[in-house]
Amino acid sequence: MRNVIVTGGSRGLGLCTLRKLASAGDRVIAIARRETEALACAIAESKAASKGAIHFRPFDLANLAEIGDLVRTIRGDFGPIYGLVNNAAVGTDGLLAIMHNSQIENLVKVNTISPMVLTKYVVRWMLADGGGRIVNVSSIIGFTGYSGLSVYGATKASMLGFTRSLAREVGRSNITVNAVAPGFLETEMTKGLDGEQREQVARRSALRRLADPEDVANAIEYLLSDKAASVTGTVMTVDAGSTA
Image (cartoon, rainbow, N blue to C red; front, side):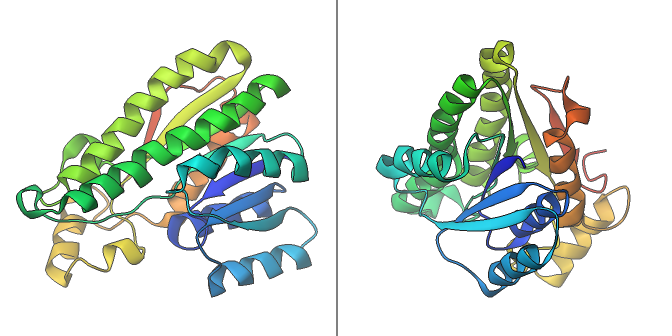
């Protein structure tokens, strides 16, 4: 059974992804600050199934100093880490001119620095174990931009550069590094958009709708699979055709 770490696994895309991977037979270690009712249900369902499994490790990824110990503990408890899905992020919006410095710092820390530090420690084990898969969850905002999301967009753009450079850095060690760039999804993070905004986003897409978290989870599952053995340093856009 392959071990895959999924951050931000308590809701939305992260929860959908860990359900998808567990149903495919993987042992998924979900990392989030707290266990939600939905995550508890997913864990219970995985125990009743005969394929994969879901385990929960409570952790605040803003606590950079303890990430190394977290990874070491997971490796000790479950064995070699096959995959890492860097999904956890905060989506704070606001105009840059009036955004508090602490909000900017938190966005950069959680969305960029934390996944980089986590990847650093996971990659060390992957190098020792002979390979692995890394998938970074970015966003189309990282290359299209969106008013009121300048800092968020900057953090997501940084993950694209990180993905491409790291893919070259670790490729010779049989480690692939890819990214998915979702558009606006039907999740809690888009509930802040009013009806007109949601309709406007949907109208601009080729498929005239928002993408579904299941679509993105399918892309992540593919990038972690044997079918994507020669795919690295690339970005898969899943946005219902918003950027077509």
